[in-house]
Amino acid sequence: MTETRKLAAILVSDIVGYSRLAGTDEDRTLARLRGLRGDLIDPAIAAHRGRVVKRTGDGSIVEFRSVVDAVRCAIEMQTGLIERNAGVPEGRWIQFRVGIHLGDVVEEADGDLMGDGVNIAARLEGIAKPGGICLSEDAYRLVKSRLDLKASDLGPTQLKNIAEPIRVYSLKVDQSPQPTPVLAVSAPERSGPPRLSLVVLPFANIGHDPEQDYFVDGVTESLTTDLSRISSAFVIGRSTAFAYKGKAVDLKQIGRELNVRYVLEGSVQRAGNRMRVNVQLIEAETGAHLWGERFDKLVADFFDVQDEIVSRLANRLGHELAVAEARRAERVMSPDSMDHYFLGQAQLKKGITAEYQRKARSHFGRALDLDPENVGALVMRAWVDLTVATHLRPEDSSERHRSAEADLRKALSLRPETADAHVALGLLRLQTNRADQGIAECERGLAIDRNHPHAHALIGVGKTLTGRYEETEAHVLEALRISPRDRRAGMWWLIAAGAKLLAGHDEEAVARLNRSIELDPNEPMRHFQLAAALAHLGRMEEAREAARVGLELNPGFTIARDRAARPSDHPVFLASLERVHEGMRLAGVPEG
Image 1 (spheres, one colour):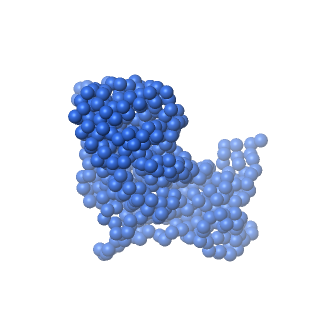
Image 2: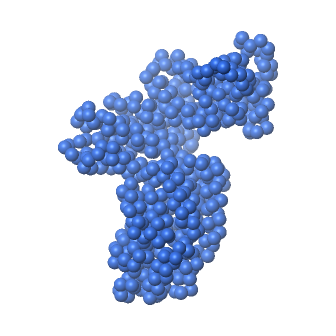
Image 3: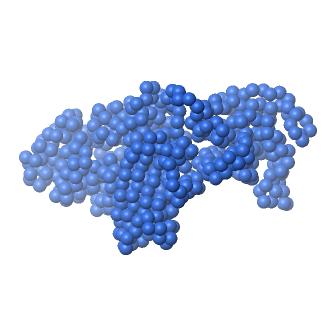
């Protein structure tokens, strides 16, 4: 058999006025179209389990197993285009018409589709309004009760080259974008590029050594890929970004053309066996310099150097972008869900105290009130509960664990490939006497994002909880290698210190605890562990002072509460923990 007949949902899309757009500025039109395919269209098709049957220069035919998936994909595409056209002059908008039909098709041996099912979808696309979606009656009947749609019944419609009239429904997608006004007027508060929207421009090859080009381009491509994993980030695809390679560019103009808030540019220079990489993060709208960094590395293996540079940059940029978005959110009169998400992140960056954690959790809760499917807020609210349970030892730790698990389960049901959610679930397992499962969840997170530093650190926690203290520090050092200036670095040093303290290496524990306290002095557990280590070393005055500081930060802490919250029943760990508690007791920490 060379062909198969089957029932399929067919989506046909086409760009409105493509010839006019290409005739005006073909290079930029093609660059924008490649960017839309890489950053919006293709991800939407993949997310809704579609198969691209055929592409034309300005359109495509896509097959779906479900009409519901086809319509959801079309809505995501059209609303995404509205957002990307915002602030762009009307004459340069890229808009699609979309037609969807459920019907009989013939699949050829090469995967191509033919027949009335395809023809009708194509004719429906032809009568759709710019930015609109037209459905046949057969398609509409299957989705009207499953999706919250606003549809207009166009009645029986004669389509070109289709024998019988077909009843057509036109779906209303959110309003069209507003063109850039000719006269200066007050812009809507929420207009402009999407949050966390970024383009990584091709890095410059200083010295123009052609043998370095592959390395320089590799840094750009890998960084684009890694940044796209940041929750809620919108990163312009490499094919679009590379259209600017080697050209003198106006960063504000790029921001307007690509509709992004931020531009990352950089350069690579080699001198002998040393490599220097400079990067700058620019706010596209104003041209303001937000952050810069320079890396100097000895060149041993190009790919190892590239991986290290990319991992460090991606983690640092994730932090800097969140800081920039939090500053924006502070200026908003009526914060929405994502504003509250970034405001919560800003509170967490201040340190691990009951007050900062409470404020952060309040913002994440408000974000979820406004959007119950905000995956980032679900994950971060869980992080707050797990952080408080681990470091502050409250009486409601069990309830916080239950709340965190519910949030993480929902987050993973909405977006299974969320590295942060898997790592947070790993921490929950570690806290609740399931160390092996915790390590496995962190490894799942690393399979999604190989440069997730906290996943490495938490695997070290798992090794500690199973009595393998000598293995812990290597995982902590890997986290610090990937993200040496991470806001969680103090916590990672605490993990390394805890393993040393449990193993009885008190001098080494003190050195690591002092480093941890230097990075964040407001987390009480560091002071309690320091008190225990100093007491075992016979430095009682210092031990009592450390215990006093810890109790100021967490007055309700007792040895009994810490023992009750123990996250492992491994016999080696339990024996070591008793030694730690004896040190706390000697330093004056209350028994409880």
